[in-house]
Image (tube, rainbow, N blue to C red; front, side, top):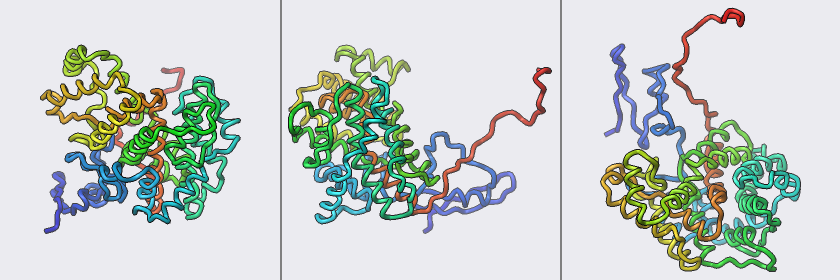
Length: 422
């Protein structure tokens, strides 16, 4: 039996049967019966504006898969560059393909000296690292003029490799500048995450060798943040990409979307909330205030997940490994108690408010020494692979330029009144 819906225009009595395909119905079919009638969907919460084979999120059951692979398996068994390859190519790489991919990324980690000396060093001394990253990514399009050849396979692959390779370098450079420390060049003898940690924390030692447990924890966090379907920043990437802008400009737009506290800054808001609570004794009064509409329980609930975020479960386990090295984050006890109380309170469970990826990731980043302003930057590094996978997919699909409609609710036609008569 074919799944379908039937819509009826009560003004005329006309009706139309529309098939349901992959959980959606075609707006083009809808328009056959109702031309000029638009869906009003603020936030696009019930609108699928593209088809994709990259990531699936089942929010009802707390499931996340990249290219069909459960996120739990990838976080346990894989590494970030392998996952990036999977997102971009649709399949896990062979050993030979992975060695080639890792070599290509490693050989593109350096940034042009003018980006560092003339561009990054031109920012004000207290510039926010994420603001610097947004600008620096956009500026790369002026250094790689071949980036505009988006339909040339060789050029496209080169830009993808460059962006994934250079994001950690730009991110670390933004941090070092913001705290008045000298730039550290990439060490291409290190793996992806260890290299980033070296560029972040190296001081005077000939070689910085990151603690392997902390490097692995960062690897897991990068895997969990690599893609998440049509979120705000990915949609920004697709919207700008639909105009056939170069990938650096598209990535800069995605970074800008990620800059907002509702998206990439959410784990920072969790840390602020836990700091404001201050102690376990203050949790009951805080929870009551939230229930009365005063304040918000940061790190709980999600636009898509109506169950426990699968990424949060993995991160909670990873936190134990990190704290065994760094010492326990003093905010952890508050977080654990807050989670316990919320998960046993009908007010939150009836609203299906469960911990999301942001609830514990900020605690790990803070324990590893990252300042709060670096949290959205840390999000941008791994998400670059997902953004580029979506950018590549929309080009291969020859997607239309994004041009939504609106419901006009403004003034009716009126005559212009000269200034002297107003």
